[in-house]
Amino acid sequence: MRPITLLILSITISFFLSSPALAQEAPASNGALKVWEKILASNTRYPSADLRARKFGYIIMDVKFDEAGNLESYEIADTKSKEMQKSAETALENSLDLWKPEMLGDRNRDETYQLIFNFEMIDPNTPDEAIEAATKYIYKGKPEKALKIADRLVTQKPFEPTYLELRSQINRQLGNEEAATADLLENQRLQEKTLTKIDIKVFGVVSTRVISGTIN
Image 1: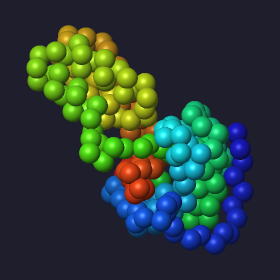
Image 2: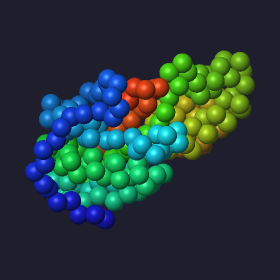
Image 3: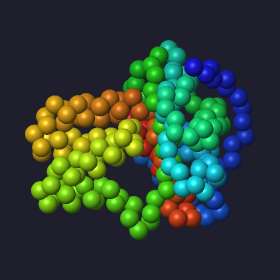
Image 4: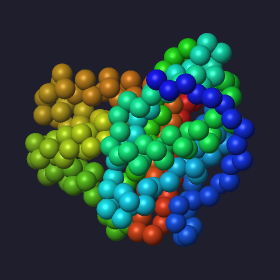
């Protein structure tokens, strides 16, 4: 567990690569939280070595809050790249001075929530290819093949509620009620425990940051 030391830092909002980048954020509970998420996202860089290798991955941080709602410490729960981990940790350190306890909204203090950084390269012509393929198999009456795709998606991104919901629907169609219910419960747990999810998506030469999973 790494203790967090608050430092006053000069933060410049900039994006990776020279091409224009888009920052999109999901609805947040207040303006301060939106600013914090945007700064967090803008300070996250897709590591150049991973970018050249067309490597995707994610970092999941367990972020601990004290009784007052201050960021107390964090630890890496799962990582797929040391360089991505370094980028995520730097982004967090550069955003600490903007955190305010009231950003937790109605959430409990003295709790641990997850902060997720997802790095991926997307084919701009087929951004949702896997989801579309699974959906086609469902419409064709071949849920077993759709389930294989959903299993792969959940394995690649265990933090993504959308994939759990998809797999739950497929399992229900197959009559696998226990598995379908388990995915719905995990979906609910993720939404309750996810503080913020930062998606760093590279579409060709354009880097896009999408913020989701925010506290309501």
